[in-house]
Length: 230
Image (cartoon, rainbow, N blue to C red):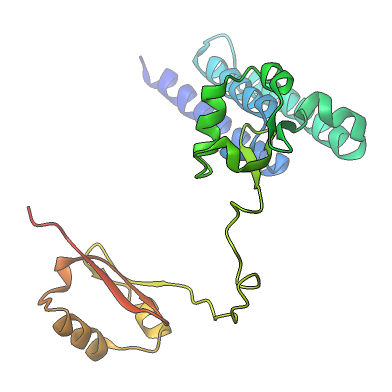
């Protein structure tokens, strides 16, 4: 491989990288766990177009940009269509499927979605549900995740149900991470170095390097995780 080939490959990689980056920003995709099967396949095809174009000697930058732009335009047209015309949504994005209705498994929907009972149980366990008897409704979303509504007797009671007064909720703040003090966070909590040293002394810790993780929570105080000794 000579210098000119290396230079051409570098240019094509950079152009392809930024082209994909711009398309991702323009289309405004959600995180991977939320994309539909159609969007997932589209992302694979888009990456394949760029990959093949980069390593094909007969293809130049113009063809890379053209292929990426054409595919992105088709995706954008579909996005606009699904937003403006409701009838197209079920075709391109699919629609949720009710797998359990009023506590009963809908075997037709299960077969339609090509799921067996073991796969259904696995999806339910991901929601911390280990018994089908607890479920009133279970809906398979278009991205492959499952949403569950429990029967009332299995649902967790709320403070309102128990007539309990609301308590303030505090955000935990990381003070030490992998043996290093995050001084901005320490100061944001209203503390200083002397306070931190006192806390370490109270917990019988001589060096900050001994701490893997430490966080402060206003209602619970300081929580420390020490490093494991090798």
